[in-house]
Amino acid sequence: MTRPSHEIGRDVVERERDALDRLAASLGAPFDDAVEILLACQGRVIVCGMGKSGHVGRKIAATLVSTGTPSAFLHPAEGFHGDVGIVTSRDVVLAISNSGSTREVMDLVPVIRNLGAKVIAFTQAPDSPLGRAADVALCWGEIREADPMQLVPTVSAAVTLALGDALTVALMERRGFDRKDYGLFHPSGAIGARITTRVIDLLRGTHTNPTVHESATFSEALEVVTRYTLGGVCVVDGEGRMLGIVTDGDVRRAFQHADGSADELLARPVEEFMTPEPTFVRPEMLAIDALRAMEEHEPRPIMLLPVVDDDGRAVGMIHLHTLVQAGLAKDRES
Image (tube, rainbow, N blue to C red):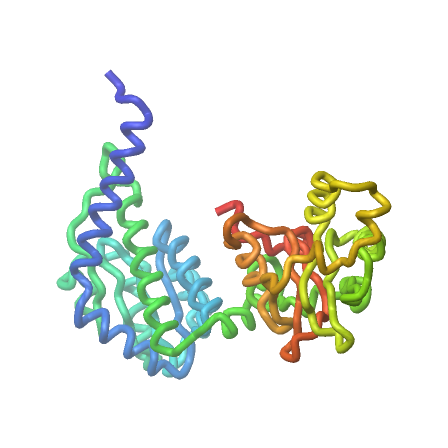
């Protein structure tokens, strides 16, 4: 009788997990040697592999490129028809073969050697043909693929990808590759926005800087809140320094708990209704950090943050909707 589908899926994931556990435990001196070779590389990391190994290799090459390691993918079969010309003596070739005997890869190794490039092998066994031919062999040992025939590259693909990620992150840390560097390689899209967009980039001068003087009435503050449609107003002194904030929530609560007439309420000083010393952000702060400040605010998340410069002057307000529209929603999808 066929097993339930979820049991089949669970078995696949567990097999891949167990193989990854063994891989993690096996990493040692050869991994260190591979990292040193890659750090010393003055050219590019050329990744090559056939079939599913090739598909995984393309992803490894793409990840290396995006994290500051120049890299390219070389299809082994195409290598014999001119593409091997991308390899130079300054390069390191990362050759992938689970069996360690893939014909197209093995036939290419002597050519790579003649060109003077070093070879790092991703393979199952160090005594395989590829393992013996490489300068360093990173091996995961004998594994069982997850399909009933144990033929489909499932577990082997997972460990290959994990090993590529491990090398990539090790290189990033050794080089001190940080968020700013990552932003240089991802200037567009959601990732680029999260890494490079500052609070000041989302301000629009007076249009995003509603303020009232500390001597203003509640009525005057309400008029500014309504006119600017940001949902709040900063209360400032004569030098423009922020003293507090009045939000549309403060306005609603004021009317709900008013004892006298509306006219009396509107005539009262705005200072009576403001929140003094509210949470604020600096103009040069990353916008994604402003979003985190809103979401992690205690005792509850907030929708609006005043922006204050180093002299304490109110220079703007940033609304949650502005951050979301800028593509900065903090992984609500993750």
